[in-house]
Amino acid sequence: MDRNSVRMASRRVVLCALPAALMTALQLAMAPLPNIEPVSLLVLVCALVFGRDVFYIIFTFVLLEGLVHGFHLWWISYLYIWPLWAGIVLLLGKKDRSPLAWAAACGAFGLSFGGLCALPYLAGGPWAALSYWAAGIPFDLLHCAGNFVLTLVLEHPLRRALSLAKNAVER
Picture 1 (tube, rainbow, N blue to C red):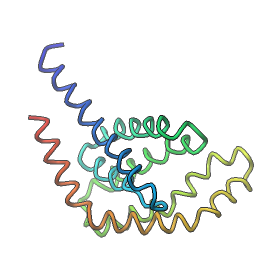
Picture 2: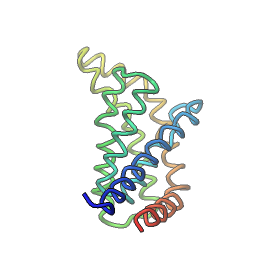
Picture 3: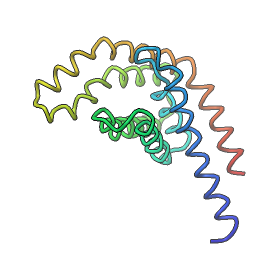
Picture 4: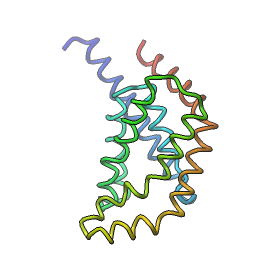
């Protein structure tokens, strides 16, 4: 490998590690608020700016979550929920969308989060998964509202800032 290739690869690693660290830090900072978190918005923005490289960011974030909080049953759901959300954004992102459309999509994702998290609980039977999901519906409603508001207000400025950072690093 030549020196320029190594430098570009190093920049790419840093460019993927920083958003994952930011997701982790902001999620911890907002932990006192019930199910109001910036990760859904950051995954959305990173998917729009970085394209398929968002999956490196997501799996780094998921690993950090396991290291910070422990590798429990909920952690398994993070292995498929965040990549699923990024995949949806990548599919929707082929056409430019308004902040309101992104806010609605992010809110819908927040509303479905509990149902998606309940899937590993199927190991205990369908009633275990259903009861887990049903008990969390009030939190899913908060998650929906939080995602909607955060995305409506911050999607455009965050996307612009992240695009500028990406362009600066790629020079």
